[in-house]
Image (tube, rainbow, N blue to C red; front, side):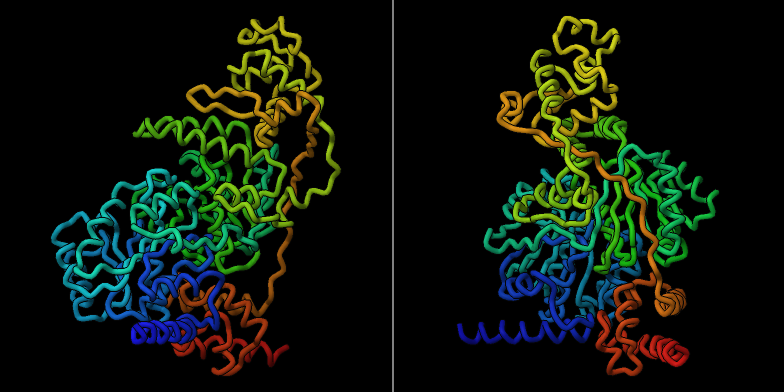
Length: 598
């Protein structure tokens, strides 16, 4: 027993050396070391960590300490390629097996694994359905299996993929079962329970480091001309890279053409394009050849471009999981970045239509409930980041202090009386109708659809407001849980227990309009621009995305520390021995030249 513990302790000591030598960091981030310790002790482990929180290191570091090859199950080709490029840039032997390789190339990779030359092998879950491939894997020494985007294994997840269930076939290949680590950024408590059950992970080995991203500034912009807003934002932030997500291919194409005419350096990406065109556009964005990517949600999973300074949602996504995953592609280097959602009431109908087109009709009620949570987010007046992390089960977060709601200092208005009028109308209508008809009755509309409600005392009781304004107010009451929604093909609203307290005068309701802010101009360090140009030249020469060379965070740290020799260059965040040898001379030279001229 003592010998076993000594081996584990030695491995834990090795992890610090690996972190420094290969990845250029002096210490682990929050939660990483605890997860790694459990993995090295042989415990199947679940790691729930926000996008950009450093999940990859939780299996990459143990992989370099353990004997054999770690298998990484990953859902997308782009995700694998990015991860392997980054590992190779750090001097780590890694490879992937997917449909982009020829038969000959696959055999070459498998031969390297057989000879022990590959420390991390990335594979797609679909590959596990091939029996001959599984037989080959069974002949290798595999101490660890990492399952990335683990929420895909759960039927309760927003991105359930039946192919992930093939992971069970993988785990039974070896007499001595490898340790399993499952990793995800977007998992509700129900999804976490499902992952643990399916992968035999004990609850005490499930780690949640928190869902908050403190460097992300969340904004909901309502009632603005979206096209005009984006034009102004891009012009104001002309030196920054960003992603704009739209709900449909048609919206992507239209917005792309608008930005091209404006002279913006822009790429586009959606499922209606050929695979080759999508690949070209993605590479242009990754290599900093264009400033902005306009895309549907087909783009982004596993895109590890670290210098994305803003993510704008041109339309509301269909659920909170998708939104947080997409928004989380901003600021992966830990620098302050913006996540802006441009909301319009019509977005809900667009998403309802897309949900109705699903091939699995049994999931429609489930998806509609998630959609309502997303609508509530757009109308809440609590901290936006608090709303997000509470959705994922974290009730301890107190507020970000920087989102549109936290920074709106205007006094609240007492809207209790108007709320009571709405609640009274809902009850008099039998709590069997939707938001739109209810708003029309309250406004005293003469529409044929509401003629049957003209006898109600609440008909026209809010006629000083437009139907649109009343509709927005109803959405606010739903977000505050004063009204609730019964999901279905035709959702209806009803009064909650909190709403009954409002009706009885036991609770007051206060509301303030969501503040709309224009983005601020960001100042740019001249040395940072010089270093960014050098990075781009090296990346082009090596045929890799710029962030594989160095992240923006590393470049900014160079601007602060101004390293002018190899020893001080190693102190820069993200610089290990491998990157010092590859790139140190080029960057040190630029820094020396800059300092001499200053």
